[in-house]
Image (cartoon, rainbow, N blue to C red; front, top):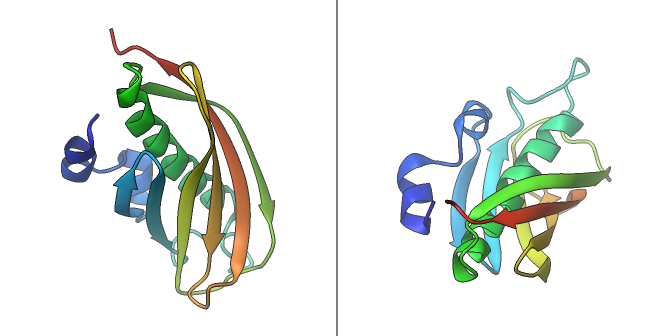
Length: 134
């Protein structure tokens, strides 16, 4: 899955259902946004699991893009953790994935999710194994 393939095909069925849109795609930085509406828990707040889906989507795409540079473009998420800092009831949240470690076999990304005011909503960390496509 190259950058052009990701742009053409989108980030996957779950991300599509949740309204995730990718806006920047490089191995060093992947940015995407997601509406709060439709991704809430029963109290009307952004669901923590939705934040994790956004984080895993952005981190996985970044890991795939890095994987192409080391001939291992298959990224498999093996660990995700998230700290939820602030509740959000409306608008759009934006996530930015940046590398904490990029090796030949493992890539780890920090994903910071903010609300429209720029306040931090969630901090997540995703680790992916990198495998060859064949």
